[in-house]
Image (cartoon, rainbow, N blue to C red; front, side, top):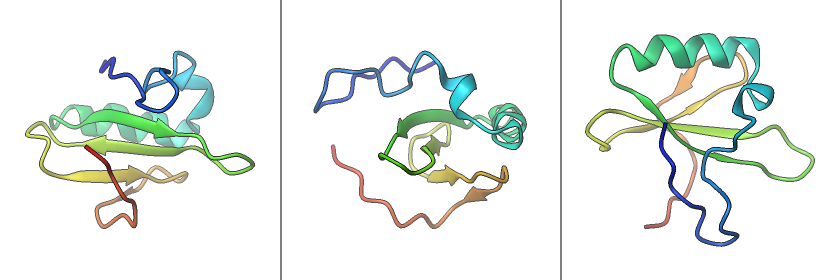
Length: 82
């Protein structure tokens, strides 16, 4: 698992309670796409909204959003910073 620190708050990019944040469908989908080299990159936790789960491929070139229903949105409307 990736232990990148969140730049603004110093928190881990992947919270230690990740299983509690993901829906059952997201957990199943994450396990399935990990078999293809994808991994969890970070989780954004906006207030009063479901977490935004960002995954990336093995090369780090492609990213996607792991939707609540387990689908992977390969064209996310999300802004990433370096």
